[in-house]
Amino acid sequence: MELNLKGLGPKDMEYFENIEQEREKIIKDSSSSAIKTQYGANELANSLHPKEQFVKVVDIIEENEDTKTFVLAPDIEKGTKKLAYFRPGQYVSVEVKVDDGIYHRPYNISCSPKKVFDGFYTITIKRKKGGVVSNYFLNEVKVGDSFLISAPTGNFYYEPLRDATNVIAIVGGSGITPIISMAEAIKDGLLTCKLTILYGAKTEQNLIFKKELDELDKKCSLIDVKYILSEEDKEGYYYGYVNKDMIDQALESETSFFVCGPLSMYEYISDLLKEYQLPNKYIRHDAFFGRIDIPDNDLYELTVLTGEQEVKISCRSRETLLSAMEKNGILAPSRCHVGECGFCRSKLKSGMVRTIDGILRKADEENEYIHPCATFPESDIIIELPY
Picture (cartoon, rainbow, N blue to C red):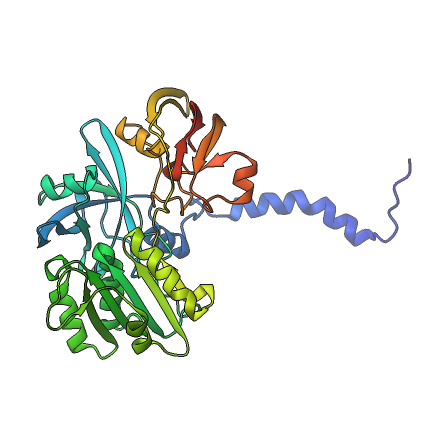
């Protein structure tokens, strides 16, 4: 067999003959120092999106009899030197060990991002009836306690490329926490938009951050706060519930809505906003758990495959797979707890489940992946966690 060397001249052949010598010379002349693997972009990414953060409670503020604000600073002894920056409206997932259980709960950061440069976050927790973690925080947590939290995450934030410059926030109860973070960011010059807050509560006593909100309303021309009480008719407050007239007073030709509160409020406000025929991008909801009808409370066996381990526990039909794992001390990945983020996405190996409508991508349904935080058993179940 003859090689076709047409087009190659003597100079080309000389070049090929000298390649090995040139390579040896380059290696010999090269520095013996280690190759650089960390660049500025890597360092910035790690500071903004750390895998974990250790924090210590440095102050506790009692907002009312059922609500406290916890001031969190970096726990330097455990390796966290500074906290990651966040966008107003985002949350952190907090890991808590109570009795034999390991729980993760998402809590919105309730301060301006500017506070990161002062060295702290705040999270504000309202007592939930039967809530293991909320009751633990309000009853047991003290200054000096340390926790593991996630990086800031979530999509409930103002984005000028998407949102209108006029914003109406419709808020109920502790749903004020991400909204006061936005308001503080506007005051600090970190956001450029006009914000009207329609804040509903049962009574004046149930309002959280009223002093701070009144101060923001007074000192910042871009912020307007209106309070609506459903069980008290008092001077200076609207009585009843958020209605179309209240919205119309703050409405402009282009307006974004941020809605955060209990499920009943979401359902009511969703119906109310349909009258305005708004583009979907102008209606923002904080993550919430949709309503689902579970008719009975049967007991099933849940088998959890965690790497090389196989753990069998009980799970009732009215509790999510994640809830069953948490109370049995299984360290399962989770963030949002409402099926939105996909962080807990796991393989359903066998069994029948009921899942909140609309949370799964088509590819996940076809390949039998589920979100345990929003999935209920309808038979004995085997799942494989994403380790």
